[in-house]
Image (cartoon, rainbow, N blue to C red):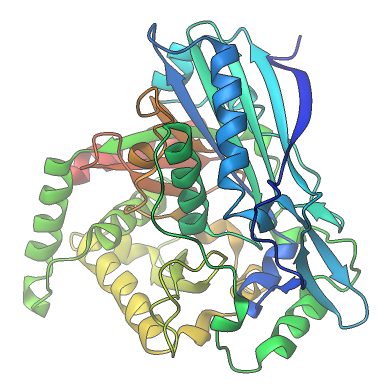
Length: 437
């Protein structure tokens, strides 16, 4: 029997008062590549005896989603291929709606929300399945799942329309409406604000390069993975541990006069070191870490913080494995990550073609980081029945993938890790505990 059973599916319509764009919203060059890597999914788990009855939860989620779509109407639209121009664009109208799936599960929600190791079989079924491999495709779908003593809210959004920052902006707005409160800020979907060299022709060139068979959008072969075989675990670094980590990095880098690293840089350096040490790399092998940086404030002119879209630039740092096994590994890793951030601050377009490395580097030697230590998912996702007990990125589908977000206490950092071998995961954990101290 399936661990999660769908019992109903419907649509939440866009209100008649919604702000609907009369013209297609064409994806920018920073969004076009996501057409072939489309799925962004997160699951929010709530548990406790004080949760409202599931029928009340459904009514609250549905009505508040409708209210949220007044400002987020493009999320109810579809992503389409405009054959005449070669663009991919969001097309929405007042008759559109967001898929709303209702499901149930007899899994133990307490264990699901509390265990370090992921129950992949259940977690992946808690976000709605949307086939985004061919256009037109829905932009957004949501799912509510009933447990004995718990509820899950799953969100699936097309990555070409939203990055992590935008996803949590939407979740915050939805949760605020569900609590009966009014959100002050209004999202901006105006792609003309993103001024990129080459403009729309650059976006079309990426589509021709990575999605030559549109409206079909095949997943790139280098990124395919048998994710059912992966081991996934979540670790939480508390505020004291992060402070010790930063102090250790400064101490190890004193000879270089290194400044204290940001929390993101420190945690990525830690994960990168652990990843290298848990794998059988040769000492001369170059081991890489890849991550995406928010380009909104790095572009010229900068894009307003309220911009809703995918506005990211790619970063890849590389070091020989021997340096990440050495005594000063953490400092070396932090320096390399910081240098990549500096480069993209000076020239964000240098990482605009962020899919290219997938076809040129040895993917088994690449640790990929998604999310950010600053994402306040737990704080933002209070729908009126408290913060989630746990939230996870369910697209942890590659060996060596790491997902970050702010921890539930608002002070630490949640680090979710996906590795192919259980023994490697055990060594990753051992190294993490040793290095944090």
